[in-house]
Length: 263
Length: 327
Ligand SMILES: Nc1ncnc2c1ncn2[C@@H]1O[C@H](COP(=O)(O)OP(=O)(O)OP(=O)(O)O)[C@@H](O)[C@H]1O
Ligand SMILES: [Mg+2]
Image (tube, rainbow over all chains, first blue to last red; front, side, top):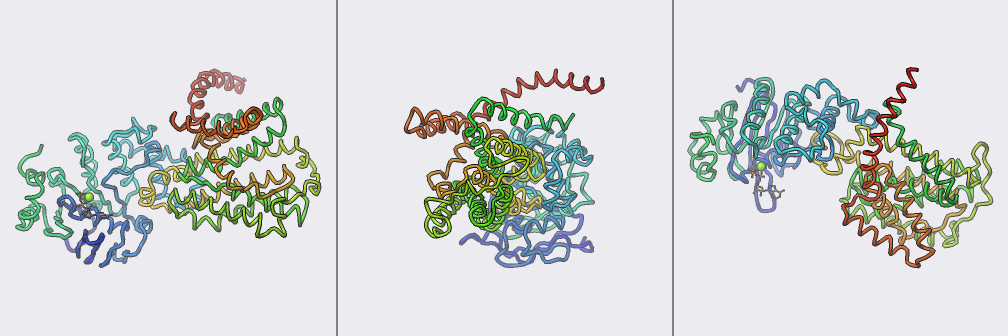
């Protein structure tokens, strides 16, 4: 596994909020085409770590490189332009636009240029029948709601839309922050079904609370606790780790029951 | 066919303005058209990008004074004066924009008001030697009659203003349909997402700011030509919220809201001010009512109903139209 090229390397990154150290000296390497997961109890620093990788926050200490290039001080746009794409824990879409226009915005930036002139001289309509967008709507079962304003969608549909927007741009690395939280079992399965198709030819990093759902297709699992990585390896290895048993399992009941039974 | 559908609303709206011109006094018609153009920038900022500005008169004054200075000191051609108003408005927006659009919405509203106040005092006091202070610049008789459309003639000015208005609305309608329009709507409610899709938020907001306020400066230059004078009154802090009022009255974020709002506002001003001394009080009550009734404004309430009515009609019209073409 270590022979593979590095996609993301975080080197001793730290992020503090006032007196609280949300991410504490975290070093982490994500390899090309790896499908990795991060779990951890509430407030473990998973989202903050994501925010550091994607440029939402700048780290107080440490460096982040992407495909060998130092991106520590780069803006989110610069990282996106290099192939990083994320979703948000609280589903983030454009609620005042239709489903197809949401996808259109994602697609346009990635496949055309985002210069002002291109934005001004292309109509939204020109995107609506792009084969790639139509195909993505099929994949994510969004055809029926394509012209609906996103504010009228269910949480599951919104979540599918956000992931569809991320996958549509063919990112080099896909960072998903709790993509399954709050969804019904059938919706979880349909999202996992799509993600499975990308396993092996896309680098994916997933933050998840309910390990049971993603365990079988994660090649690697990292456990965070109070801003630190306390275990890293295959899912079995990570969960067997003594520190994980001690600190994580005691706190998070869902993870504990995960290995035993699926609700 | 698609092109037709794109234009028909615009054509209809401006045809109605022509009808208004026939039945109502010319000054009213001129005032409405210019006020509409004045308001559409504010409507765009508020409804499409989520920026509320209490300082639109600043940009109106920039356009008006730029044209006014030209007419007083340099030349007499109304067309050139209008172009100068637009260009100077564009430049000023481009200069202050990068500072202003960084601010959050509430501070944005106030910083524009501050600019309006600054310009007011500049024109009234500081630059009084060249602006004549409160008296303003008077150049009506200097203006040179122009061939084809004589802008010094109010009835021909109306035709010109109408054409400019039509072009402005076509532009804003196109803007709504463009990817850029979608970016603006996106930026209005979810800047983070836009950033993490790779768009440059700052540039999107700055562009919106420049577009809107160049349009406002255009309205200012039109006033300058139409009125034949310009005084600090145009950017008086007491008039600062007029465009916001008209925007809300007409319907925030609707394409034709500014026109409907301008007609309603100017109409009420003309009619109510004759019977009521405090006519603005009525507008105040009306605004409170509109906001409590769902913030849709006059056009925002009417549009869906008219669409329903029209789509029934449009279906039969379309059938007729395509027959005529094949025949
Ligand atoms: N912007 C912020 N300002 C202050 N504190 C913050 C901020 N963002 C996160 N924190 C704090 O940092 C810690 C880590 O938060 P983070 O959101 O990264 O946790 P998480 O692992 O994603 O948790 P969850 O499972 O609840 O999503 C928490 O204690 C949180 O309160
Ligand atoms: Mg989180």
